[in-house]
Image 1 (cartoon, one colour):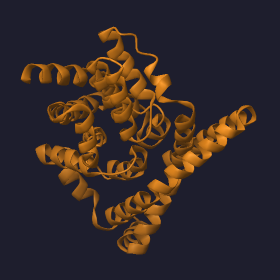
Image 2 (tube, rainbow over the protein chains, first blue to last red; image 1 turned 30 degrees about the horizontal axis):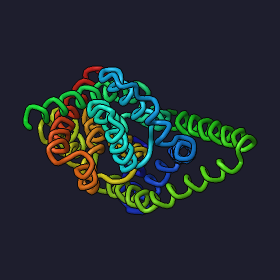
Image 3 (cartoon, rainbow over the protein chains, first blue to last red; image 1 turned 30 degrees about the vertical axis):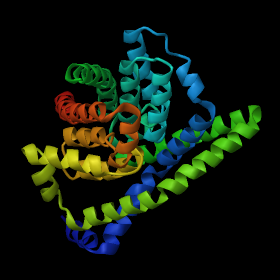
Image 4 (tube, chains in turn yellow, green; image 1 turned 60 degrees about the vertical axis):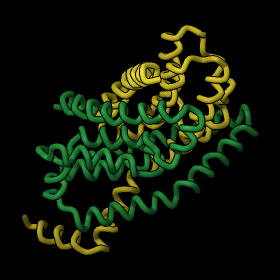
Length: 150
Length: 165
């Protein structure tokens, strides 16, 4: 109560709001920098050829593999679309490619430390596990629905 | 106390990544230089978006009270809350991790976990990239995929709220 009026007052000014936002953001900065540096390593050490080489030809297994690789991948989704196109050209099933591109954008193993630290470990774990499962489900539903409609 | 833990963890994590860079530099210096350049490119690309996000946080702190967040995105916000989370997720820009601090602030102000999850899931729908997606996978595929993703985002959000409760 004693500090309440002061606290309320400082947040009611733009300068106070700016200071609070900056302070809050700067606390996440080490995590964000760590994630960006990891992304740099990913871009250099993980190539599309490496990604393409892991698919086996079995639809069910490839769908799960697609979701796994998408989950551990990171970066601009454009890259996932390009790799997805190459995988399709290499006769990898559309189920696997769909799971790959959905998992790429919805599951974040690389970003997990930051998400867990900022939003909570339980939340981050639940969200990523569910997103992984749903990447497979969405892939199956999408391809099946498109098959029915066309 | 939670924030102090967060910054300690962040520093440890950054320290580990830097250690990894050091070890890999000893093995493949040319690749590490490329990786550093790639990271620098990412940083330069997202810098303007970071500024915008800090701007959002300033506006949030100034205009939005916990009462407002609770009303539109808190317990009992209903369909409005979901629509807001879905729409803002679709419209949001930049990498997912730069939105974490803002979402943390909103959660502390009363935003439901399920809506945070729905926001993050719908970030997967990148409107500017739709033409490229259509080029590779076709209009029908993309349209059906997007519908399922929006539906799943709500299901996932509900499940997370159930897990967290």
